[in-house]
Length: 289
Image 1 (cartoon, one colour):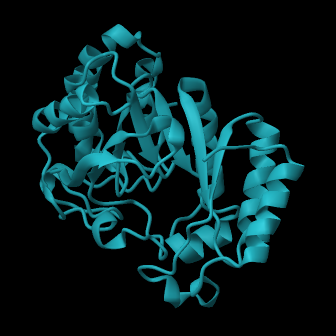
Image 2 (cartoon, rainbow, N blue to C red):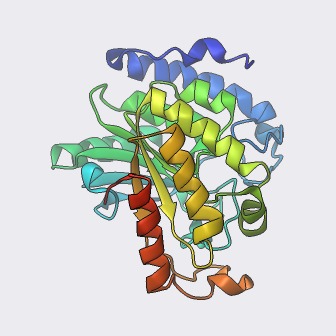
């Protein structure tokens, strides 16, 4: 049981900015022994210690702009990308920025929120926090939510590797979660992203997110990983989250350190893509674009 469990009660929408402001202060204090992600490294980030994400006390932002490349129901979206990530996916297409917690400019929650509000007034439908991985920057993320209108449609784009404490702080803060389910087994997760106990953690977070918000689950189809990763992910979603929206993405490209792994040196084949679609249809998954 987490000491933050009382926070997990979902607030009313009108209360979101005020509660986010309070939680931002709580989250800041928790940087002295950080357990925001499921690595549970416990480092003192305020004292300059670094865990697997390499993030310190300061949050930095490497992109804040309107984007139209995400799911149709959330675009156009004002997307705010924070530097640093707790996973080390060798195939990360934005690895140069996503792995580097020092990239970009110092994150000013009020200033970026002002830009987000302007984007909403100009026609953007949603505002999304992503990374890297935003969970490692909960104090800044919550400070940003505190500056946004209570009625704004906020999206949390995550690798779903957060901790129980992170869930308590995030309860009721975002209208939609867009969550990755990258690997269907722990061996692939360990080999390709250097993360243990991956499947249990992600499944736990997805079940929670589906209760807390609207949920979209993403899976990037990787070459050589249809049977070992996509199939078990699809089977679990069909059994445990029937009807959840699933974005099966076919845009894998051998970026970053992909060439360390022989099977990741090319995009998925046409047959692998067709096989993945057959699996989804056979399980009656609710695929979206």
